[in-house]
Image 1 (cartoon, rainbow, N blue to C red):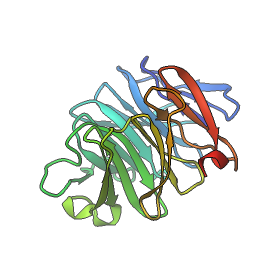
Image 2 (image 1 turned 45 degrees about the vertical axis):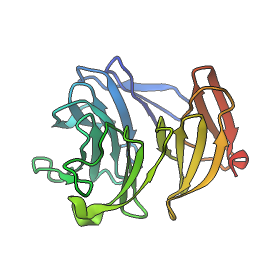
Image 3 (image 1 turned 135 degrees about the vertical axis):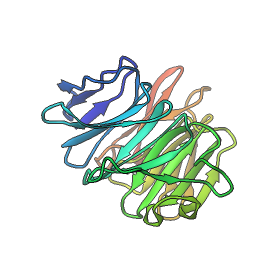
Length: 238
């Protein structure tokens, strides 16, 4: 399944061919981020209406609404649909347990700070194999957090700084890579070592935003620039 976020506040669910299945109605502001769990039974969305919503993809109904104090720019959901993760303008990284939706979420805090980042959080990724949460912010940093610590500053594991900033950070489907758009470069990080394994210049003179590699072996990576759309294959990245 494919889920799309949109500034009209109406995220849409489509099949793998792109055919429309349904539209989720309920947000009162732009939807900045949308993800589905592994079996596509649940979806999570983050919105400018200061909320994250969890949806039943079969009925289209809202299962839970989690209010925030500012815009929610990034969300993710665990493969089983047991937890969601949110970040945004508050600079706070949160984990919600969907089996206990009324309880306070776990908050992950950088050492010496009161928030996870010093700038807006623009990407949140749940790394299931390593039990790590990955966050990326306007402070030009990608940070890793140990979910087993249950929040707080003790959960902080490591960080990488990108002097050219971060336009996009995505996990490539079915692989151990992170796709990173930083300035005019496409970078790829190994989630095992948390090191950059490939660094490619932009095919245009404009900054890059990347879409993740798809599930097929030599699928396309989309590079969105102000000049249009470029693509590259997984073998080109290697």
